[in-house]
Image 1 (cartoon, rainbow, N blue to C red):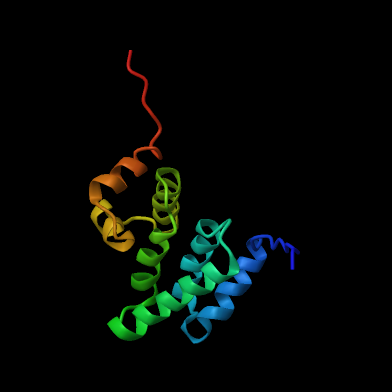
Image 2 (image 1 turned 180 degrees about the vertical axis):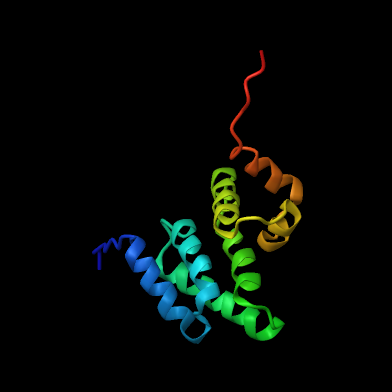
Amino acid sequence: FDHTINVNSPGPEQRLHLLEKEFGEFYNDKAKKIIDLAVEVLNGKSAADICKYCNNVKRRIVLNAEDISQAALPELSIYATDSKSKGQLCIATKQRFGNISVRELADMLDMSPSGVQHHLSKLKPKSKTE
């Protein structure tokens, strides 16, 4: 058979629905920030990739006794495959979780502190020197 079927990547609402459905019993108030972030980071990924991400997070929660933020963020950083998406992940995580140190953020994302600092430096407005 020579038929080709093209399936578009899920849109933001579909990604949100998939994540909420897949996390099921693990979904709580703490998971809301993570899921909102995942909706952004998983843009362009297939539904199968999103389900795989959720399964990996649930596995970490059960096997390592981690809470959802400990399990979800390092798994999410796997899907940030280039420098631009890693930067967006660092910035979005910092904005959502507020007043956390670079080291804490690096631990959450399973990245180096210097890499996180590099990406966060793009957040700060550049001062003009005379």
